[in-house]
Length: 148
Image 1: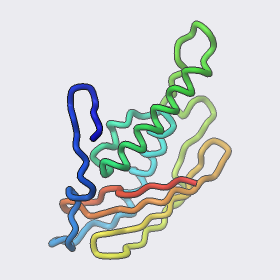
Image 2: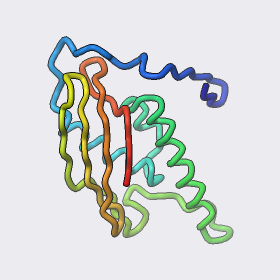
Image 3: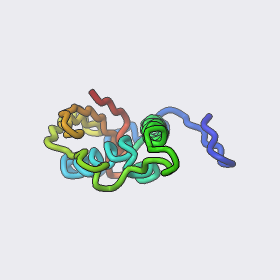
């Protein structure tokens, strides 16, 4: 059980996900996942609040992304010069640091599941992100996330 302030949330695995093939055809995940991947890397970099991706992810993925956001913000606060307050990330990506999705490759493994490989630019580094998407109410939700 994850407790946030006075609201207790119980995570019950994947019970909220659709586990049968969808009754209507799902949209192509490629256009949707580009924006989602960008939002996820911005949250993990401390640029965007975690609440902005809560509806796009399953609870376990959201918790992992929110923890990474918290660690990034705490690390930035300890690096700020004395007396200037915490170093807050800006929407431009903290000065010269660039965060961008370069390329995506989608593969539908089943009617209700897709696997996505994403190539990212994170400052001067090129990184890889792997996502698993699961069908939910006629759309997609990120059910697994790995970054290398």
